[in-house]
Amino acid sequence: MVDLVFDAPAVKKKSPVHLADLTVAERKVRAEELGLPSFRANQLAVHFFTHHNDDVESFTDIPKELRTSLADAFLPKLLTLVKSVTCDGGKTRKDLWRLHDGVLVESVLMRYTDRTTICISSQAGCGMGCPFCATGQAGLTRNLTAGEITAQVMMAAKACDLGELPGGPTRLSNVVFMGMGEPMANYKAVMQSIRNITNPQPDGLGIGARSVTLSTVGLVTGIEKLIKEDLPVTLAISLHTPDDELRDTLVPVNSRWKVKEVLQAADRYEAKTGRRYSIEYALIRDINDQVWRADLLGRLLKNKNAHVNLIPLNPTPGSKWTASRHEDEAAFVEILEGYGVPVTVRDTRGREIDGACGQLAASQIDNNS
Ligand code: SAH
Ligand code: SF4
Image 1 (tube, rainbow, N blue to C red):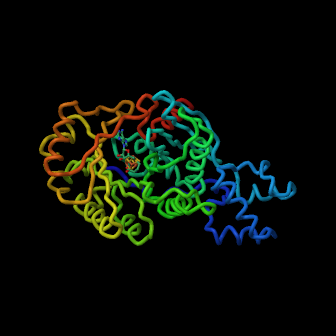
Image 2 (cartoon, rainbow, N blue to C red):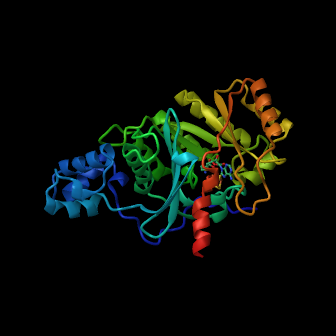
Image 3 (cartoon, rainbow, N blue to C red):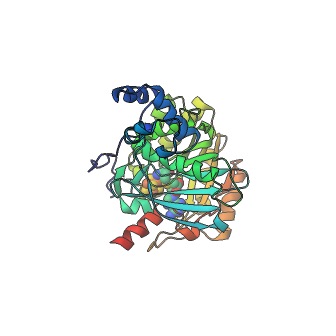
C-alpha cells in the first residue's frame, strides 16, 4: 500500500513573495505599504506580464532609486536555470530550474506547426505514488508557489518572443499542467497561477483559459472546487485503466476515488463548462493494453463529451514496464473508435531528453547524490 501525501511538507524557507503571488488588489496594497503609489505595481505588471521582462534595471519608466526596492518587493528571482536539453531539432526544450531553496523542477517547451506549448510543474515531486512515473517515485518535496508556477510560463513566453526555438519569434499559445506534481493537491497556488496565465494583459499573460490544460490523477474534491470557479480550462483525467482493480495499483489515489466517481466528476465539469475533457491513458505493454480494457473504456465513454489521449509509456529508469506493441496500440485505438470515442496517440516529444515528467530532475538528483 502506497502512502498518499495530500499535504505538502512544511517549507524550510518560505519562497520570496512575487507579484504573481498576489491578486491585482493585493499588488496595489503592497505598493502602498512600501510608501509607493499603486500605479508602480501596474507598471511592474506591464513589464512582467506584457513584455515578459523581469530585469528591473531595464525598466526606464521606473526611477533608478526605486528599482532595487521594487525588485525585492515584487520581482525576486524565483527560477535559476540549471540546464537545458533539446531534441527534435531544437523544437523541444526541457529546462531544469533551481528554486530559491535549492529544490529542482522542470518545464518542457514544445513548438509545433500551429502552436507552442509549455508543460509546467505545479509541485516539486509528487505525493501520489503512481509506480510508472518518475516524479511519483521521488515523492513530494514541496508545493510550488503561484509565483514559481507562473514564472515557468513567463520564461517560456520570453523564449518564444526571442525566437529561441527554431522557426523565429512566436507566441506562447498553450499551457499544460503535465510536468511534475499533482495540480489539485496544490489547489490554491495553481488557481492563482491560472489567473495569472489567463487574465488579460497587463494583469496576466493573456492566454485563453481554453488553451490551458489541467491534468489531474482524479482528486474529486479538487474537480468539484474547479466546477465552482469561473475558469473554463481544459480538464484532463489520468485514468490509465477503466477497472478499479488495476487502477488501485497504477494510480494509488484510486483507493479514495474510484473510476466511476472520477468520471462522474469529469461529466459534471463538462456539464458546467461545456468543455470536452481528456482521458489520459499511458499504454503499458501487457498491463493495461488488452482488448477487453479498450472495450470497457469504450463503453464507459460512449456518448460522452470526452476524448482519449493514449500515451506510449516512457519507461522510467529500472522499470520493468515498457510501451505497448504497435499492434496492441492500433487495436486499442480501433476499439475506442468503434464506440465513437475520439482518440489520439500522443506524439513522443522529448523522449531522448528524459521526456516523461520528473525524469530530468530525478537524473540530476541522482548525479548529485
Ligand atoms: N499529476 C498529474 C499531472 C502530471 S503527470 C497527472 O497525473 O495527471 C502528466 C501526465 O504524464 C499524466 O497523464 C501521467 O500519467 C503521465 N505520465 C507520467 N509518467 C509517465 C510515463 N512514464 N510515461 C508516460 N506518461 C507518463
Ligand atoms: Fe503524480 Fe501525476 Fe506522476 Fe501520478 S502521474 S505520481 S499524480 S505526477
